[in-house]
Image (tube, rainbow, N blue to C red; front, top):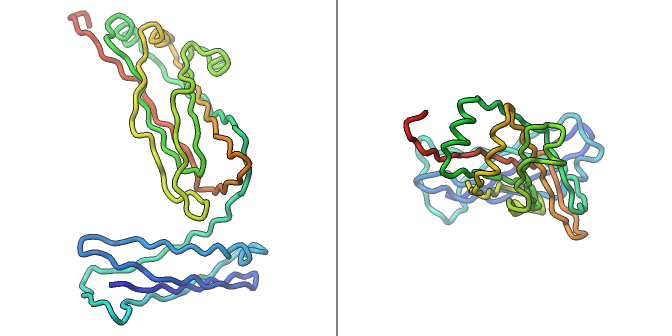
Length: 235
C-alpha cells in the first residue's frame, strides 16, 4: 500500500529542514524505490554544519487503498546530501595513470605466430552528467605511450551522458561490451616484455551550459585483448 515519509534534519549551525513526500507502494514480489529530492538544501548547509541530526517517521495507507502487511514487509530510508560543483566545461582531456602488464615470452610467440584474429574488448561505464570519448594507447615505452604510441584506438570509443535528476547524475549508463578488431601488424605490440596502456578521457563540451558534478560521479573503462589462436600442435 502507499505511504508517506517525513524526515527532519537539524544541523548544529542552527538551521533545520523537513523532507516529506508520498511513497509508492511495493509489489507482491519486490520492493519499490521512491526518490524524494529537495533542492533547498543549499540554505541548510550555509554555514556548513559539522553535525546533522536526522529523525522522522513513516506511515502506511492513504485512507482509500487496501492492502495487507505481512511478516517480512518493511520500509527503509536513506539520505544523501549532495553539494554539487556547478561548472561550464569546454572539451577537456583527462589522462589517468598509465598501467602496465608483463607479457611472458611463450605467450608472445603464441600470439604473434599463431593468431587468427585479435580484438580489443571494452566496456565504458559512466555516472557523469556529460558524455565522453575514450582513447586508448599501447606501447612498450611508458614515457611515450600517449605522445607516440605503437598502437592507438582514437575517436572509436564513445559514451553518452548518464541520466540525471535535477541536473545531477542519478544512475549509470554503459556502452556494454563492444569490440574493435586488431590487425596482425598492430598485434606486434605484444612483442614487448612489458606492455604499457595509456588512457585519455575527453569530456565533451557543455556548450556554455553549466553541469553539476558531485563526489559520486565517475567514469570507468574496462578492457582486455582477446586473441583467437590457430592450434597446429606446436604449442
